[in-house]
Amino acid sequence: MTSAPQKKAVLYRMVMPKHICPYGINARWLLRRRGYAVEDHWLTTREETDAFKAQHDVQTTPQIFIDGRRIGGHDDLRRYLGLKVRDPGATSYVPVLAVFAVAALLALSISWLTLAPLIGILTVERFIAAAMMLLAMLKLQDVDRFATMFLNYDLLARRLPPYGKAYPFLELGAGTLMLTHSLSWLSIPVALFIGGIGAVSVFKAVYIDGRELKCACVGGNSNVPLGFVSLTENVMMVAMALWMLAGI
Image (cartoon, rainbow, N blue to C red; front, side, top):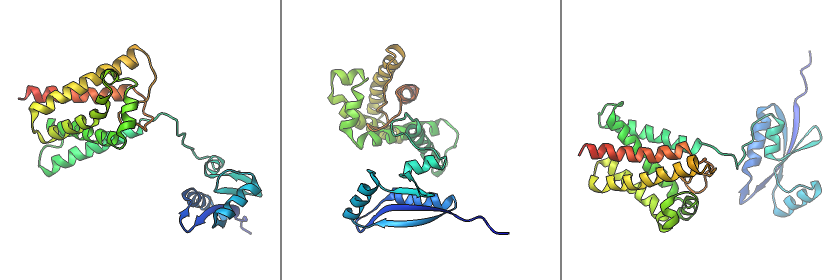
């Protein structure tokens, strides 16, 4: 009994002294994983790459050929193999969920190290404070872009644009002080202020005006839709501040 001949694919990818195409590496891995014998051709100079593109009338590399037919680039290969291709413009809650998941792990870790109950009010406080700090960190990666995106819906930032640039620092400072239970006289008013204005702004933009916007909550590059998650961020800040105020 003879075995079926192995499937073959031809791959052209850039492998230069100062640049190795990551999509080419991934394409080779996908093909081999699906049982293809890969004929791997390296394009080692810019001239060689440009000549290849002109010959095959393509704009990008890598390029994959199967059974003598050009499949296309990396994303085309994924489609050919029946794999999902990410839409860079699609909305996604993944960034916020990642922040909340990491904040929860940090809160649990701190409670574990301090011998505090893992399930309790103190852990919840730490979760909210850690989430505030992580969200502020994402905004601080590009303050100008965040502030510009923030102007789309924040009521105070529209009247006072510098507030948009100050917001990440206020959120980070309040979260840090709340995590350590320091200077409550400062952290509580700040959290009430920015959280309250944020909650009202999001509620008005989404639930009253019916606008479809992207949330600036995880920075200015996100595709997170403005809505429930954004409102939750602000409500958590207000709830934390009120809880701490009640405990003073």
